[in-house]
Image (tube, rainbow, N blue to C red; front, side):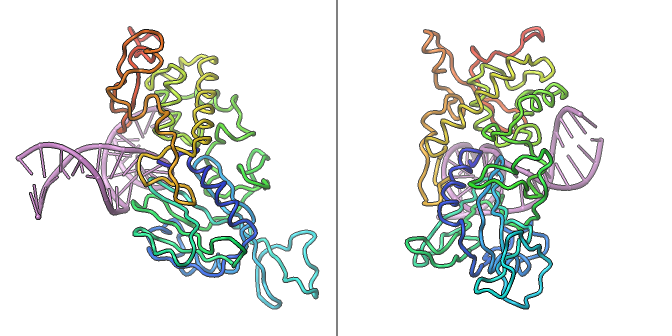
Length: 336
DNA sequence: AACCCAACCTGGGTGC
DNA sequence: TGCACCCAGGTTGGGT
């Protein structure tokens, strides 16, 4: 399912196709997919039509497109004139920065697809965004979502609390989409702070996987990469956070960064057609997973050491957790 | 603060 | 063939 590497694959694909293009019209085919836009479809569409996409930015699993608006003379607006913008009277339209972004979260099954108009609507097409014509570029950005856990909405851009860029984009802005401001930076973000992460982990009294999945502690990690990072680091999901040594935490963050970097290079993890990039292609990292989904199979690390150990699946936090009982042992006598 | 659970959804799978 | 049920899981929000 879409976790950081999958969302980053989508971000890169989108950036290539939509940066600098203007939204000409929007069809909301299922209002449930914009339910997080509290003001309804009409307002959602009104915020988007005639807006130009400045960039595609990601933090964790959140993806957003900062917007600019071109307005003809006399159009009322409470936007802000950008410095160095048109001073009026010239042939160029006035450009305003409305301080909003189009936010997308893929949830469990959301897809953002670039399509030509003649391609038939996908079965679960929810929102269609038509873009200004451009040579050799698809004209539609489609949001397709089978399970409707994901969605699109318009959100304000606010100053980034730590002063760095709001997230990873082509031309990073010092603002962040308001609805993503509560989550921590992800391990692929150059401004990620290990010290912040470690302080938060040590201040909690809970199981290790719980903080890995807590987007306000470290973002971008979901159930798949949590299991993979823990396996790589040789740590158990129920390890009490307050006993975690600095070296363990460093190894864990490195493991998470490594596995997600590898997954990104492979185009992400696809188990079925639910995760695809903007061109509809699957990633092939699923074959490189060592723990997730490998219940009953030998642990590859143990096998390499001449040991026999079988990956097991257990319930933790109401979801499946996959571990090797030999190289990720549970505590004995409460000691780790 | 930590933890649990419900809600939001569909489709694929299994058991009867 | 059909029906009931379970499962997959990201995020929010409410309750304890």
